[in-house]
Each structure stands twice: as structure tokens, then as C-alpha cells.
Length: 498
Image 1 (cartoon, rainbow, N blue to C red):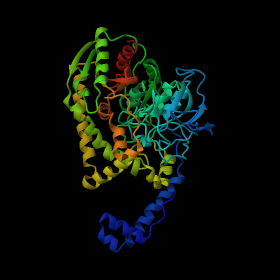
Image 2: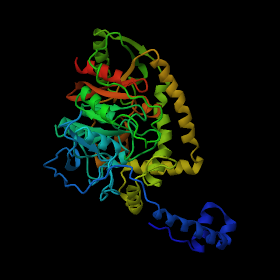
Image 3: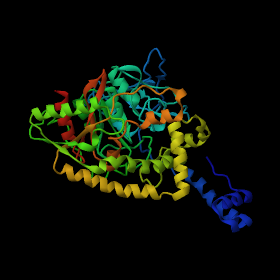
Image 4: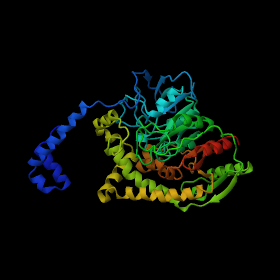
């Protein structure tokens, strides 16, 4: 898309908006200079773009009907076979619809992208195919991944696999549901505020948010580069470790992958918990919206680990209760800047920009009327805060996240893992659209108390099913030292074996 040379009237109007009153009164000199500068942009087309990600010829795909997919776990079904052998040979893999798969539509839960078909695969898709997995479709996710519920996707709500009419959790809603229904063996999720762990908890599967940067985020729709994570969702802990083994490691593109440490996630997974120190995080229990039976189920699970030889102690980290506030301060500006003003990407990133997706978002920016209540809220509050204080509070929150990180690190120096409920409650009923914006927004955020802090401190965290309350799953969250996913899997496997 070419940038047309401006008229003097256009530059006068822009100058007036910015506050350059002298240029607004006499814009001709600046108009001439700007015309020359934007003309340079056409020269970009003379420079070939390097092939960074893998592309493929057109693939066949279908959009499942409600009869074929009653829970609405899938946006689109396809079959892209992987290598004949490898660690994932025979695995049917579902890919969250915020992740690029060449030749297959990618909606990212939105109206704006409903007709977009990417040209390239995300790095993790390439790695999974090379390890033998078959990509069988794109799983439904929330509108631009901005909800912890499962009611905001433009294509419709996603139902909990254990109880129709209840939320499956979000934003990786379909990725969790497809595992429980048996449609997929493994899935990919992305996690900015708990979007892997929350649906794992409410749907009853295993979901890992790896250490920040461990898994390349190249070729994935972003909310903010400071807290974007991508990771595996599976039915078992061992499968989760297997999928992480395939996708972890630098791809030479993702700028966040500095000094990462790839572990051995499988060799000690069955070693048990004898001698491991588990810290039960006091502030993670009894939180707002907490259900006493969920807290009890998690504590009973920890007690069972004690019976197996784990050393269990209560630990208090008061700053944990403020983690959500820090996350919100970053998200207010970060998500509004990335999703709503910068065509799905931030700036200043020396990695890879999916230009075709950015062009599509620019061309369809008029579709904003389709935004659900939570997206509208972040749009409005982001713009308001920007007008009042610019990016100041984003900067303050990122700086203070180091204080929160240090508080967790101090206790993780004494403990092998920390424990909280993943979500403070079991799955909630899907909100009634007639109850208005407040109900819809509440249903998007009420479950995120214990998950958001670790997106901004970048610790690995896994949700493992640990029981049920009234027939609905309960998830226990294990938090570990940076790049120590192996210990999380070891404890998670012990929980699975209870």
C-alpha cells in the first residue's frame, strides 16, 4: 500500500491536532518536505524481503458445523501431515487461532481477521511438523485473546466440555476443549494473563506457561511483548513435557530469547517429590471470587504430596496481592497500543513482523463496532490514560515488576516450587448477553488473580488438574524458578499419579 503525498490542507489539519499552530497557519514548506520523505517509502519494494518463516501451497480446510463441533472448539479443520517420524509422530495437534499456519484462515477471535489467510507458519508450527505432528485445525480463541472467559469470540461462545452453558476459560478456550472431547491429542495455547492456565483449570487439562522467551513467539498474534508467552496444552503432564521438548529453544528471530536455558524435561519426570520443598503461597488462597472448596481441594492435594515425602511449608509474599494491579497497568497501555493502534504488533522489535496480517488489520480497522465489551473497555481506558499521562504508568509498572519478581525469587531460593489454586473458582456460567457490559467484562477477568503476576515476572507456571467440585475441574498452579520447567513436570506428574 503506497502512502500518497499529502496536501497542504492535510498537513495544516495534522499540525493543528498536534499543537503546531505556526505550521497550521502556513503549511506549504512542511508539506513539500513531507512529500519527499513519504516518497522514499516506495523504495522499500525494491528490496527483497528475506524468507524467515516456512510457507506452503494452499491446503484444504473446512469450517465445522455446530453438529460437528457442539462446544465450538474449532474455527477451522484441516490436515497438514508432519514428518514420518519424530517425538510427536502420530500426534493430532490443534493450533490456537492466534498462531500463524500457512494457507489456513486465522481469525484470532475477531471480526477484523475473519477473511485473513496467512502465508507462513509460526516457528512452533514448523517445529511440531518436523517432529511428526499432524496439524488438524485452528482452535477457537477469544477476541484478540483479550478475555479469560469463553464468550467473546466473534464466531460464538465456547462451551465447557464438562457442562454446556458454562465457560471453558480463555483465551485459549478451544485448545482446552478439543483435548477433553478427544478431538486433539495436543494443542498450542498462548498466555498473556493466564490464557493457557485458566482454560486448563476450568476444562481439566494440563497447561504450561513456560519461562518468558523459552519458546519462540515468532509468527503469533501479540498483546504486548512484555508478557506474551506461548506453550503446550495436553491431557497429561508427560505429553506436556514432550511437546515442550520439541518447541523450546532459540529460533534466531525472537528478540526475547536471550540467555535462555533449555532443560531435560522427561528424564526425571517420574522421580517423585520426596525431599522437594513446596511453598504454599498464603496470598493465593481466599482471594476475591474464591470458592472455599477449590482452596480446600488444592490444599488437600498439597497434603497428599507431603505424605509422599515433600517438605511443605506455608509462605507469605504480600506483594502477590498487587501483581494483578501491576499487570493491569501494563495491559492498559500495552494492549491498546499493540492491538488497537499498531496493527497487531508493537514497534522497536528486531525480530519478525507479519506484514500481511498488519495490512489486513489496517484495511479492516473500520470493523471496530464488532468489538466485545472487554475490548471496548481496554480501548477507552488506554486512550484516556494516554491522554492524561502518556506511557508513564506503563513504565512505572514494568520497573516495579522487577520488585515483584525479586519477591518471588527470594522464596524460590528456599523452595523448589510455589503453589496456588490456578483459578480461585470452578467454571462459571457463560454470561447472559442481556445483563450488559459489566457482566460480560466481569466474566472475562474474575478468574485471573493468581495467573497474571507470573506473566510479568516471567516465571514458569503450570496448571494441573487436582480434583473436582460439583463435577467441575479444579486446577493447581505450580510456579518454579526461571527455566526450571523440569521440576514443575516432576511435581505435576506426582499430582497426576495421586
